[in-house]
Structure formats: C-alpha cells, structure tokens
Image (cartoon, rainbow, N blue to C red; front, side):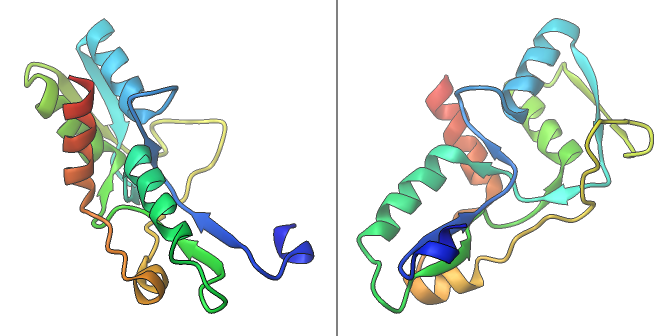
Length: 149
C-alpha cells in the first residue's frame, strides 16, 4: 500500500525477531524451560534469528543515510542461519546446561500456521546501498542475554 501512494519510502523486511520484551521465541524458550526443564523444538525450519533492539538501532541509523537513490524495499536480519532447534539449544546452553532441548520435525510439531522450511533473507541490497553489515545471530543473542541479565 505504501508504494501506491509514495515515491519516497523505505520498507524493511525481517524475520525471526526476538527481544527481552513482549512475546517471542526467546521468552517462550526461557518460560518453558523454567516451568518444565525440557522442550521439543522443530529442527527442519531454517532462518536467521534477529535481535529486535539491534534491528531498531540499525533502522535509526539508516534514516540519516536516506537519499533519492536509497528509497525502496530492503531485507534486514542477522547474518548466519540456524534452525529453531539450534536457536533454542543455544539459548539453553547460555542459560543453563541442565535444560534439555529435543529436535523434532515439522510434521511431528503441528501448528495452526504453516511455516516455510527456509526463510533466510539476503541483506546484500541493504549492504550495497548503505554499507550496513549485520552481526551474526549468535552475537545478537549474546548481546540480548547480556542486557537481560
């Protein structure tokens, strides 16, 4: 809709957002592990977990760099990739090794919404236009957990 009415715009596409606030995968893993000590997580869906606070800082930085040649649609997510299981396992290891994370397939873990098996976004257009290189998802998780604890 924005593209219909404006010539100058920036649309940011992202995926797998998490933060210390609200409801998201990181907070869900922390809650389930505290309550149950064990969980099953899908290991056949791949993406790039992205720290929402780092995403916000990056978007604010982009605003000052906008010009007539940089308007458009961009992907913005952390570098690297993992599965939901890999993400949950690293969260568990960072918090406490006693928690158990079990890998399962999407067919074993039914949800109301169908999820893509591969949702990694390329930041190449963003890097070329703005010189922005996002950090690896593992470093983003480390920074988020440091802020929380």
